Amino acid sequence: MAILLTGGMGFIGSHTAVELINEGYEVIIADNLSNSSPKVLERIETITGTKPLFYEIDVAVKKDVEKVFDENKIEGVVHFAGYKSVPESTRIPLSYYRNNIDTALTVLEVMKERDCRTFVFSSSATVYGDKNKAPFNEEMPTSTSTNAYGNTKLMIEQIVRDFSASWEDFSAVLLRYFNPIGAHPSGLIGEAPDGIPNNLMPYITQTAVGVREFLGVFGTDYDTPDGTGVRDFIHVVDLARGHVAAIGYALKSKGTEAVNLGTGNGSSVLEVVHTFEEANDLKIPVKLLPRRPGDVATSFALATKAKELLGWEAKLTLFDMCKDSWNWQKNNPKGYN
Ligand code: UFG
View (tube, rainbow, N blue to C red):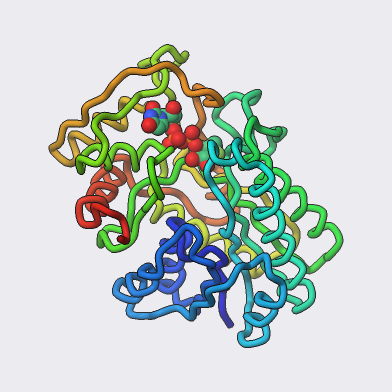
């Protein structure tokens, strides 16, 4: 009995593969490598001693997904596959809708055909929109966002809920990620963005390694303690363990639950910069810039549901996240290249 990770070669997928293997699960990965490296597989093997079975397929192609189900006994699916850049999604929204919705629909269709009843989805705190006030809890109304990426997450949550309502034995957990950073402490797997990073931590580490000249801090006049944006940064290893807990829960339940994966604490952009400097004995040149369009001032989770329902909580600190992010970047200055 195996767990299929679609998009399992990516940043969060690869860390989840490691944690699932560590917990004794058989892991199978399906990924078209559109935004990831084949080297991830060997790295997972180096860390765990086990090389997951790998299918280089596009999970929007139904016959290819059916083949994976025909050749294996798949007990559950963690669906990561999808495009994930907020700014890119505003430039090419149709590609985001086509790819993200198609992959989710295809995977769910094949699960129904093959009677596979356990599903975990890679959702995002972006579904809380800009009207709710942090801490965000799972009962709050969700809303559309200013970008197609966020809207695909919201739409797929709805698709899963409708599907779940039609199939009594189906079980799904919609994991709403806050801001995953950090890397595996081995320094063998981590975040490897293509081109100029959009997200804070890869920008900091690329500045530290000398690829970028300085970090632009977007907005210093927010209603926050130091004026910079506040986010709930969570170590990717904690996040990955949250998926293990979610699969364990979903395998023995029915119905759909949305669950936040966050620490429950907010840290400001400047706090992250200062913690990174302290943890790694480095200086990050910063330039204070105007706000970035579409950003909210403050986002952090109410993290109690994950603890009550899944028995999971984040354990690693911002200091750990900063140390491990740098350990990954300095050992892999060009990512997997
Ligand atoms: N920031 C900077 N400089 C940078 C990059 C980011 O100051 O170079 C700031 C942002 O303005 C924001 C904070 O750092 O205040 C965090 O920004 P990120 O881009 O790292 O993360 P976001 O919170 O904007 O985005 C994350 C996920 C998205 C998700 C979104 C909403 O990356 O997938 O949260 O939940 F949609």
